[in-house]
Image (cartoon, helix red, strand yellow):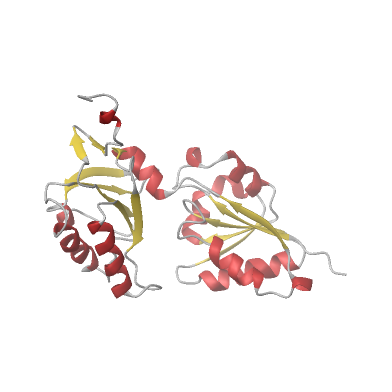
Length: 254
């Protein structure tokens, strides 16, 4: 009977090694093979050592995960990395989908999903406290989700007065979607509503700014940006966004 290896999916955090969890670091250091998107592989260069690395370009996620599973079938201890949290728009779902379709007799051990600090959490920390109350996370990329579905989700989030974090807000080819989402939210929220924009959170070129719902699309927003739209109670105080949790009911005047 063949000796299979193990495959584990790891969230390496938003960028800085300081924001990687000790558990993630330990799993990477104990692996035989590291698999990931080339840009994310570079973020953990200090941990690679002489381990085998399988890196692929953007849009090659399926091939990447299949290669990882093949290596694990051969007996290697393999880790598949994603930036942020691998369970939030990362590789955890795809690895599991492919794994469970394999015949049990040929299936390597699943080492689980090791979560990481998400881009949203990193961005929120830089902005202050914008997601202190109920929030929604929406990706504006329509590569895998129809744009009509994304619009409907944005409409419901706006109508429900959720703080809303937007992943993949704008790319070189996809420039109109962020404006469409802005228009949706303006039907339900005041134009003065604070909107935080963090680009390159936890990376060397990190940039943070706070704009408003009526003006934020004029800012430089790209695929490395994360946008957080406040709810009707969110306010800007100096350099910070604050979404009250409701403690004012216990402490009047807070």
